[in-house]
Image 1: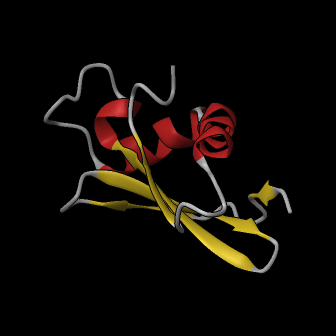
Image 2: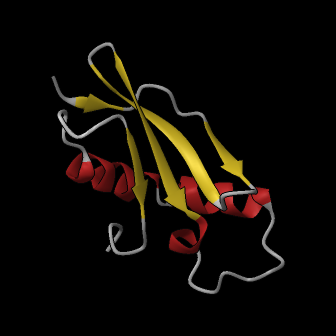
Image 3: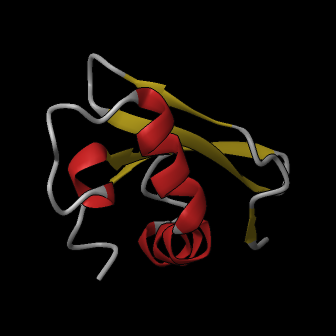
Length: 87
């Protein structure tokens, strides 16, 4: 199967400073996290949850491409993407 992203929902985890989103490999759910610092070059202390979610939405296509590259069916169901993954 191919990794797909039919669900456009995402959320910000303030404690971990990541944006969460889901991918699916057939019927299997794959959790992805994108580090907040990967979404903002400045990592300004004043950035809000809404700011991070807007940054995620603006880069969604490249983030999903990075998720597809990082995903390996035999390596697990949780992945954290960093700035290096998004380059």
